[in-house]
Length: 133
Image (cartoon, rainbow, N blue to C red):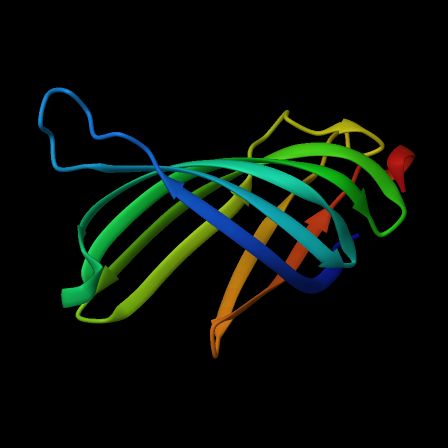
């Protein structure tokens, strides 16, 4: 059975030093605080390239989430893959298979990030093994 969760989150991203090889890839570390159906925190590591100010860029990230998801306590990792071309966005954020712990062991799903008027929110469609529900 697929479950649906939603809420908001706060994020703080911090630029990291550039690679010594001079490769034009930006690096960031971040933390998030989730509110709503997911109550918890995460740590994020992100790589980006391109020029978002000109409407063309891409990023990949891994995020480790710890908290309570609709009554289930544990952790899991999310994998991000995003591109922007001509100002249009394509974003895929999915649970990394096998990363669920505690009552979230076996979690799978797709996480949707929404940014509107400078505010961040999410929807999360996920499944848990029958024993965990």
